[in-house]
Length: 212
Figure 1 (cartoon, one colour):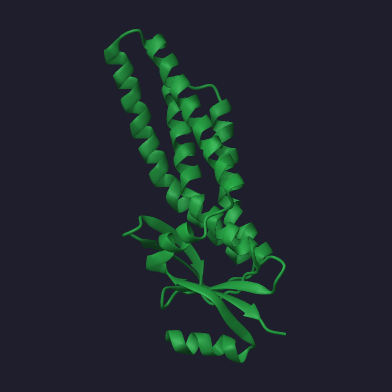
Figure 2: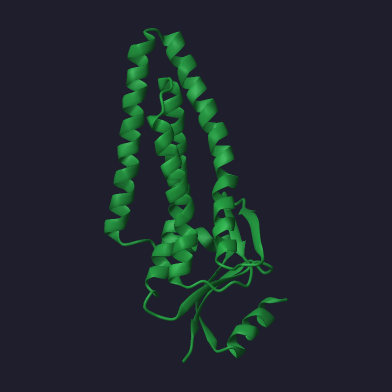
């Protein structure tokens, strides 16, 4: 189904387009619709706190190892394990989106990537989601994976392992920024009958309002 046919189906059903973007322009769309300043400050405060925590553990590693060779070996191990963890995290993040989409009733959920923006997605083709539904879909990976990674930090392990887990957590939180910005954008419509729907075939996302 081409773009015009897709839109015509919803227009005939009583919907009107209030906004849209192409997948290739998603980062520009999100930057134009960033969350309120208070939410951005809170997000960056959490990220900064995590960076201080990583710095503190690296300082402790330096004191613990006692010599430069062992220290850099430990740092190298942290980076390698963090990179492996980040590679694993990406499909797990999108799989959680898939699970929640399917639980919400979406029949056609597809995975993809926008390599120019280094963005990955799970999108439900032709599935209407209002603010509350989208909120559950958007926040599921943030809650589940953040909780899991924080629990891992509590387990006894070498400092280089904790640094690796903390780096993966930092990557995870930064990866969730797109979900959070999209949710912030959707929140402006939470008191209106507005839905988001993906036309994956034509790589468009629409925001549609049901007309009374």
